[in-house]
Amino acid sequence: MKVFRLNNQSVSKVIGLLLLLVGFSMQAQNADKAKALLDKVSAKVKTYKNIQLDFKYNLQNTKENINQDSKGNVTLSGNQYILNFMGVTKMCDGKKTYTISKEDEEVTVASVGKGEDDNDTPAKMLTFFSKGFKYAWDITQTVKGKKIQYVKLTPISSKDDRKQILVGVDVASNTIYNTITVGKNGTKVTLTVNSFKTNVALPKNHFTFVKAKYPNYYINNLD
Image 1 (spheres, rainbow, N blue to C red):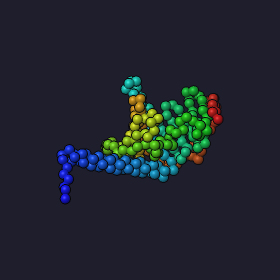
Image 2 (image 1 turned 135 degrees about the vertical axis):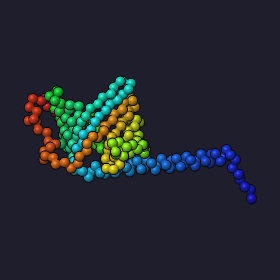
Image 3 (image 1 turned 180 degrees about the vertical axis):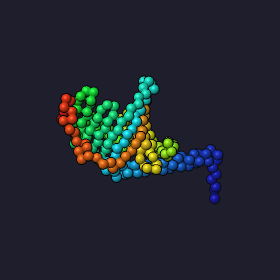
């Protein structure tokens, strides 16, 4: 019986193929692990009656010499929300959105689904990562005594303006600590959650727009 022997070059090729297969296997496992962690976050968010959070916003673009900080807060309950950010209040009662600008003394009213940015509503802030991305397990950091595990998201669509997003998850509570979004134009936006409260006692009409509170405001109805 003839015996086939592998030469050194053939052995190297076989080892290379094995390492490649192992690498693919580990990547798949890491992707599954990353997706599973984010699924836990989404599942936990859905158990709350409402959520209140304060956040810090930072925008950087070194090419344009931009480094902008701001703070905001948002109250969420299902598809209803009130967002206060950069001097503007945006309220949604589930059917209509009301964008209130104190500086301009104007309220812009639009039905849900008609706004350009309805896909980026605060209600989706904590669950946006559920689909449309490739997932990868990233670094772990300890921040203020909390273990933060990062998951790297890469948009599947080539039309997406975002290059990648890092989602930092507080492992102990399965809640989001921060998100770091890097755009294809070099802009980096970091959102950091400063406080996170759930199931807060809210007034019955908390998400209802009351026109009488803005007597001198121009009402710009887009419907």
